[in-house]
Length: 66
Image 1: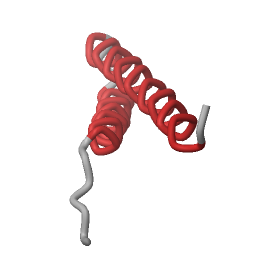
Image 2: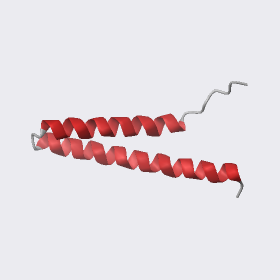
Image 3: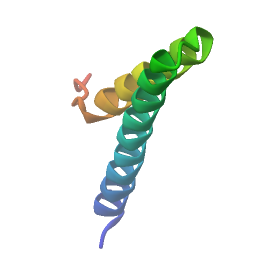
Image 4: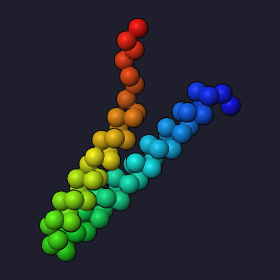
């Protein structure tokens, strides 16, 4: 396995971890909303949104500046 393939695999694992963290944070946020814990709900929903945005940013191809 060459260096590029290894780094691609590592990036995919990090992306998957971020996606799972985002899903878990959204679920915790919805659960907190159901229990009327507004501050915790806002916190978890923000964390979920940021993690999901980070995961999608990693998937976007970068424009080459060459």
